[in-house]
Image 1 (cartoon, one colour):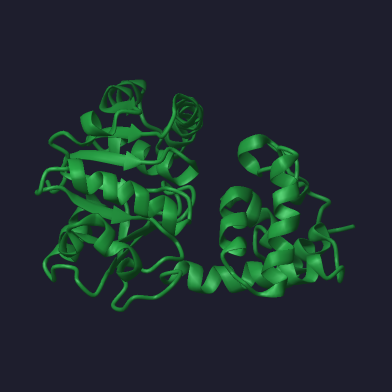
Image 2: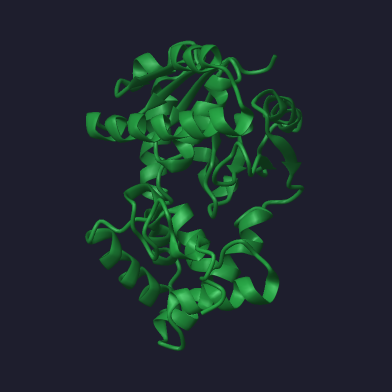
Length: 294
């Protein structure tokens, strides 16, 4: 076994999934949140993943109960980091937010503790020095619904110890992921290097009033046989992440997208998690039998 005592910093959609699958795989996992409210939201997400993971793997109630025992929650960073083997940072896509966390981490964590980022757009070399241990830092990226989309992309930075990535090949397999080695630093890793331009193309058509989201999705689904289009994917990813990615891009189109997404967030329409985004859940229109026929 590689890393056993895991801290997941941030209990959002992906953070809570990473934490749950690690606990499900027998790891001792603590979700650290910045507030009691954030932990309450993390617990609600975990309750959803619990059902989905059990159904997907057809696992027993006993395993579900064992997973619950492996999973802990705290707002106390010092207690969370005590004797931690690995910290997986899954905080918002904001350099100042991540920098503040890493600097606090560097003051508290044991020297043995490895830290990685799940950032989907920021390079390890941008963040590594903030940790105080750049040689023990790399990028580690997951796809949403990680029990199904179970890739774990491993991207070392310029200062990463050359022996470190191999440990994440093993760790990925231990938590039921398929390890994918990214040989050079690349914004978006492999998955988002392909996915983000696709979502941007759909967003461009929307914000420039060329077509409505449902019609854009429908066109893509009919033409390619895909199970969902760009706006259904955005609902799955969540509007907070979509906003952060667009807000960080200075292009005129991205800023227009960020403005419209911000309005959706303010209205409580953050995607699958809230029950409403571009579609209504749990039974979105794009899954209806007649969606591609009308």
